[in-house]
Image: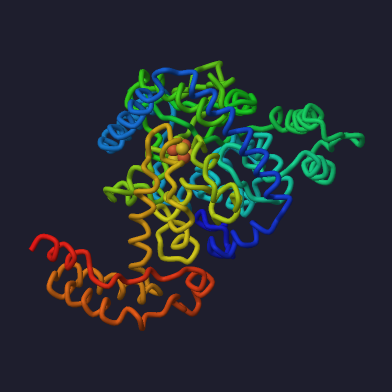
Length: 473
Ligand code: SF4
């Protein structure tokens, strides 16, 4: 992986075509999506004030983004006062360099990791491996992905494309090569699989000197990092190792501790359909005799400042990575997460990846088109990101890129025509006069699969404006 792009990935239409022909993948996805959607809808419907919470979440995030420069400096000050160290990483390479340097300085040949989208985005595991440092994922689904030499396909449930028997095979084949082996008689019962993972991970937790995490939120007022999780692996990583390195995107800032009240309701219900997540860990710098004695916060930009400069696109930075938009998206359900060629799949990936990575490569240029614009993602989003609006905005940017000359020419001609009423009227008259000669379909060459199955609308014998003039003469 490089800069968040999976090297060699085809653009979305090509990857999605392969995925939609994979019956097993579609079956796994369909079952999982149905369950998650139903449970989330139930969890959300329990709260009478969900709409107000959603509005509050949107406004808090917008305020944080508006004053991001001040809040980030405040965080640096608070973390430093509390005995931690703050590092600024402009891009993925800088962040990876900082983390590898810190791990080496701590004398670590391995690190344990809490599930973190930011570290996946920068390709941290691969960068550490290049420096001779093993990075062990400790979230169950991330462990399945790592042992299976696979890629995550969902933000919250990265191994959603795997079923139980596949997971058992992965554990049996791979655990022994990476530490404590799975029992010979391992079944595919969820409890047995979880127990095998627990035993496999336990020895890694007890041995690790360094842990690497992300954070769901960073509180500017206090310099506190917050992680919510369901398995307890996070808490093990945050308390046992001597050194903790947290790599956090700069958009994760919340102004005050009080703001958590809103997000600790929005996030668990939207992501795992829980009223409250099982484990919420908060830490501020270091505390003698409690948890890691060395804490480093790496503040990651990696395209976020540029995204913030885009008036329409910046709303993507409100995202709290709950995956509710993925779970309701008909395109994601059919294509699966791998088709998006990024660690951020689904609707949020379609607007975030092209902004963080730039839209000048085929994978990212294709992502804003990976949507039917049905609007289900916007409805589900707990911080009211208008994903369809950003998709349309990014489509405009994508067609500015080389390779879209024909579309640009057509749009420019249409713009000119609609700007000149006399020319438009003349064109309408000409179209009506020649209507018998018009073809019924457009043969668009490479786009023939689309154009050949669509009839061209019949041109009326007179335009609406001509008809109107006649009626009101
Ligand atoms: S865009 Fe909204 S719904 Fe999608 S992951 Fe982000 S916060 Fe959740």
